[in-house]
Amino acid sequence: MSIRFGFEFRGLAEVGVWGGEAPRLHWFGLTDGWYWIEVGELRLLQYADGSGIDYYVVRLWEDLLQLLPALLEDVPEDLVGFVSGDSLGWNDVESEAADAAMNWYSDHWLYLGYLRDSPAICFSRRDGQVTIDWEMPEPNKFAVPRTGTVAVDAGQFVAAIEEFDRELLAAMAARIAEVEASPLVGVEIDLEQLRREHEDRSGWLQRARSWQRATDWNAIRAGAALLSKY
Image 1 (cartoon, rainbow, N blue to C red):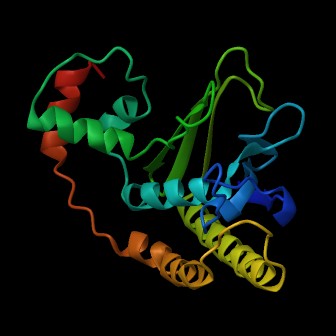
Image 2: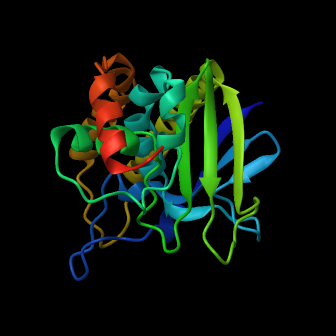
């Protein structure tokens, strides 16, 4: 099954500025637009009216790179139920093992807490595939069933992140050139800092891919047992 991370920028004149009485813009803010996730014929994070998530596109990119190291290792079969389950019923315990299990669990969930009535989407690698489990809020305003599960080849998933990275950086290079050619009147933009940040972000994917995880599975299992029955 194919997967793609789609996005569209707002026109430069419509981008929301920051700073109130002293309006300014920066790299993050210039990614103002819409995004969604295409999985086969499904469009996760697309509303029933056809619109995508109205936010800064770079936020999806950042969170996918945060997820990537966890998706380069398989989830053991006995932890599948824990990682894809609901954390609302967890026990309130304090221990290093519980903390390790909570952090490992969070590493597999796409952060969407900045949205009102946010969806819950879990990504976990199993037997060379990335399984995507989701639960949409009620009432479900999204274009997919309220709950569901799909799986895509892990290599395709990583390739989709790489494609998203290339497309976003290319779009931002074009946007920076647009800002340089047609400065926004009354809006402070540090062009030198904009170029430096663009260059730095161009290496984020490689850094995410090179991060070597050393998961202590005994600690994860012990913590999961303390937090919940899975």
